[in-house]
Image 1: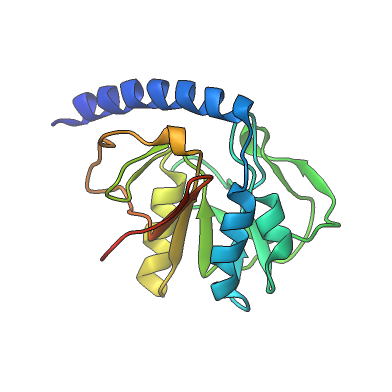
Image 2 (image 1 turned 30 degrees about the horizontal axis):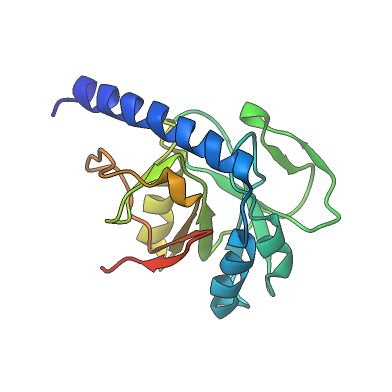
Amino acid sequence: MNDAQMDAAKAVARAAAFAARKVAFAAGQGQAAELLADYLSSFNGLTLAGYMAMRTEIDPAAAMRAHQGPVCVPVIIGPGQPLRFREWTQDAVMEAGSFGALIPAEGAWIEPEVVIVPLVGFDARGYRLGYGGGFYDRTLQELRARRKTHAVGFAFGAQEMDEVPIDAFDQRLDALVTERGLRIFGA
């Protein structure tokens, strides 16, 4: 599949996944955040990257608040660049960053060891479909080149698709949490 065909396949998959996520969001996230917090408790003490949910994304904030260790959120530096992560606390003053995502107005730049990854769709192999900017794939590739970095997808179960179209650039998740439970993906 050439680049144009891959882009087209991802666009079709993304549209279907967004529609499924919208319906799931309206139904509520159930116990998903608690399941995520339970899973992440095995990583207490490590630096955790979460994200500030936007629109119909499932919200990891409860799991971020429960984490015993440093927590940070992604900051988009620019197109084609990996994300950087700014320290986050419950009391942090937040401001709108790129694409409207909230980011801490100030704080230390820190590097996560565990990353909660938002997504549009996912499959049983552990691949995710993102928004199309490549930010998380680029970031995970860079982090994993330096040290072990655990990527945990967080989504509604309805976002599962038969097969996410992937290319050599796409990074696989280590685990995924939905309101339906936890999945661990092999090496």
